[in-house]
Length: 289
Ligand code: ADP
Image 1 (spheres, helix red, strand yellow):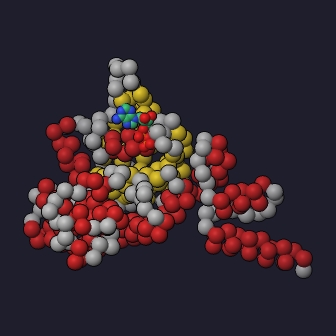
Image 2 (cartoon, rainbow, N blue to C red):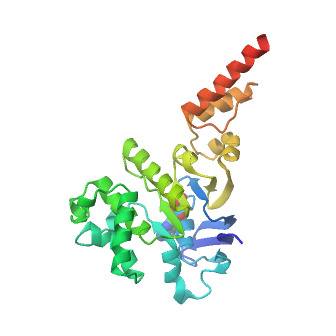
């Protein structure tokens, strides 16, 4: 049985009003325990709506979400438990910090779960460490932190609930390139150590291709593709046609492959590209001998 199964999932905003808008249309897929899934698509393609359904924040207009084989809306009174199991980091989560101290903010979720004080303290310390928040910041007011630190504190608050599935909606939005790389590395490390399932929404193919096992491409509310990074990149030109940027280096490799060179096109870093080109050169040297 899969950890998460979406069956013909659809969501329409403002049903029956003049503003009716189908945001997610008939999405079916399964996600296995421990996978790292990247979700990509243009603004308005339905990514946020989709992930908000997965943690029970909004109820599908039609279709089902099965968590461990059970429809999460089977008993609407128990939807709170789903939100503990499926942790959600919203876009710009720092706007949701509200406690007197960072420590209390991170502890908010675990406290609501009814955990013991010892366990709460342990989780606050561990999750602060995961996101790289220095212990001395815990006693400060969240409003004394820098933008990047606030973001980390908000993410730590969700991690502290130890969700089986962690969903992050554009966690690097608004950060500078260095801050973005550091945060992505921390999320990748969290996944590696905890072995939990992670769903990361992004509009940057470059970002998610480095850390995802599989990528879901959304387009106009529909599931355009759901496949391994390699297979997604093999359709690089299709992605560009629907307006998604693929890394420059991938474009070069697709160009080389099109011109008859035997190179992989699932390449998204300069280092990988160099290896491919080096293999090519070695090949040609051997041929000449
Ligand atoms: P993404 O996360 O990919 O940018 P969204 O899920 O936010 O996409 O939006 C999908 C579609 O639903 C868009 O057309 C958007 O305008 C619409 N939409 C999103 N939120 C609302 C809302 N609260 N009310 C009405 N329409 C909405």
